[in-house]
Image (cartoon, rainbow, N blue to C red; front, side, top):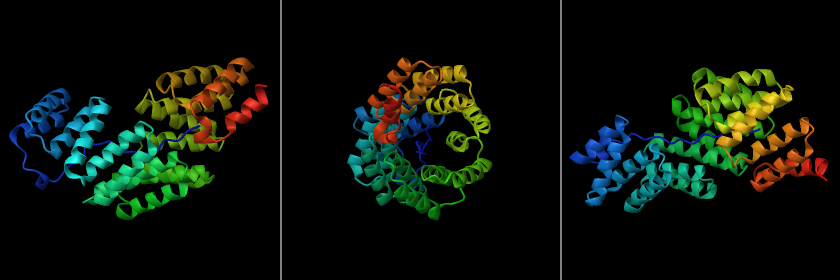
Length: 313
């Protein structure tokens, strides 16, 4: 099963003193704020074509491209913004989040380092610490990730921004086999915000790890109401169904999970477990081999290798 880490992709509100907006740039921002992203992009493109754009225009165009799911264009614009200044922390922060999404973890950590170094306000620094913690979880560097969470909480332990630190901290506790601490912390966060998908899904995961499968389903179902096509949540809910003996429901969910997250090696491991339960060793072993090809061992250890050794020879 998998837990989710917190990485923030959001348009960070900048102080008005950063730039005296020219009229076209202001029009673009107004279009963005109204979620008229295509119109905003059209105006930003004109600014760039006319060589009127500065680092903030590239930054805002990057956010616009992100909203339109143009991740490569967003990455390129964040890079352009950085190249024009060298020390614009917001662009480092959000480019790092795109790098995590592309599973370029060390490059992301480097960007979060720069965001922390150049941050001019507590908002950016807090989010950078939280995001770097989330990236470090991918590398299984739990001690360092916990330190980043605590550093974020030293800056801000009360606003909505701190929720990511608590969620990532709970993930560290989970991996370090301190599940009770993880559950208690997540329940605290859940009381603050019951609509945060990562909080809800991680709470389901930790309860499942405690073999409280029926209770875990409540949180997985709530997470899926908030984000119906979340491949990780579907995979984790599938596992709880499997442990409750509902193999047909588990199979349906894991197939849906793979549809939305086709490179998720953990889902293929779960698929293999379902086929083992259905006494179809051939399909189980195919799924385990796919999990290996998708990089399961590098991320999660030798569990799939052990399953192949026990069932596929």
